[in-house]
Length: 104
Image 1: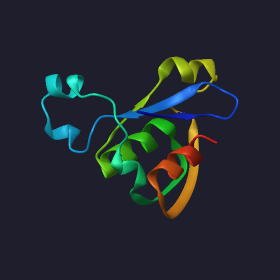
Image 2: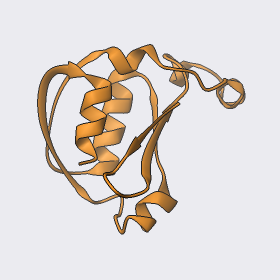
Image 3: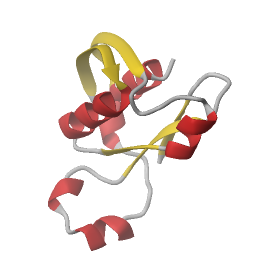
């Protein structure tokens, strides 16, 4: 499981599961062990301009077929909400890098 950090603040989002999680029954999803995801090395391109972090995470989750979960407690501790705006315009970088940039 990857946990991305906001510089000097709490964990804001976690990524877990396996590719194709949406096709699996919920009981099986809950049983799946956390492991490194090949999707984090996938190339991605995206454009978020003042997009709420929840929408940006949802978009990347659907696009790469990985489960991305916002940590509500960490967001509150960082004094951010799910509506916090994200500005990120990238092309041809790894998903891992895009997620790290999204949290800066």
